Image 1 (cartoon, helix red, strand yellow):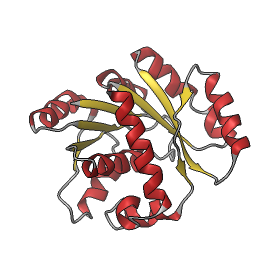
Image 2: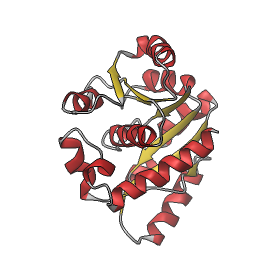
Image 3: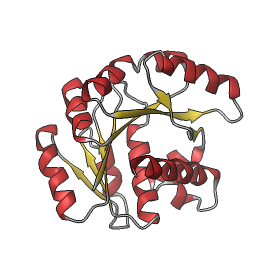
Length: 206
């Protein structure tokens, strides 16, 4: 089983959206995925409660139970575990980072958001794991914003993932119905964004 920690010390960065969409993308690609929700708000678990499909598995646990949750996922045959961490909780983020094979830091492309990744970048460095920033809610056709984001991220010694999540209404609409964008609009651009990001992630993990 491979484990990805999705970290951000800033609220509203899109951690849960990223975790759930990657989990469903993994399932569509034939992998068994598990989402471990460490956020006390339990947004991922709430999404699962409104979902008709049985998969992906989503469990809400306190960070102290993370090793047991990962072992349960492994025993249950999961191919991919995605840890949805809590904001404003450095010890929780560090525990998730240390348990992971790879770290993703979702971040909106605004300069204030990009500057706010510094605490998360420090946690990733402490854990010593490969880390990529995933730009979230990117405006369409915005090469200057992408270039500025890469420069801001490079200050922290990090790379921007080559695929991002564009600013699309399908993400919000889908999550309210217990779906993800690739299910809500099977042929839509949001689903394509997620598929490309997932396929890149799978290559990085292998």
